[in-house]
Image 1: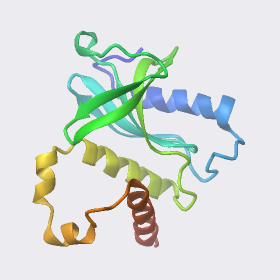
Image 2 (image 1 turned 180 degrees about the vertical axis):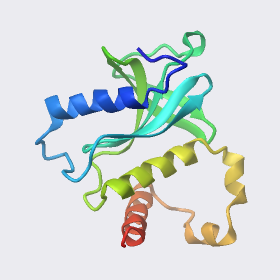
Image 3 (image 1 turned 30 degrees about the vertical axis):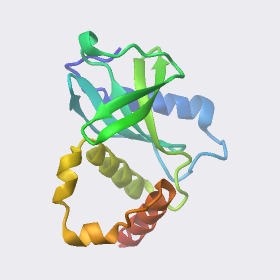
Image 4 (image 1 turned 90 degrees about the horizontal axis):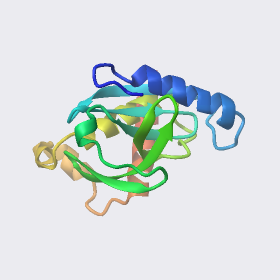
Length: 171
């Protein structure tokens, strides 16, 4: 089980590596160039939040730290969690090692053009944006604001991000 005083990044890496080895390895949904990696785990309201890159998905995870203010979680059910950037849908999950936790899927399957570095950068950036208050988004530069169309769809965001990451990932 997760301990508030112990960062669970290595616990999540170990659990998701077991899932990969025992259930996912060899499936067509998996991106052969990616490894399981925990990204940016930190305390959030006496709980733990971080991102996870796996060969089959990129997620943001929320794990119990303080039992007193942890929501009732039903495995397989969607729960809306309010983060500084707004409300996000998280799926209730559980494992023997980790107990109950929440997962918000950012990308599944992972874009085949991503390599490990770009997948980790995407996960870190998404986590940072989710933890940035909405009011802070008004402090973006003019060039950033003009580069993002107002009617940008979720699919367009990920497609644009993928192309930018690949372009910036060249040596």
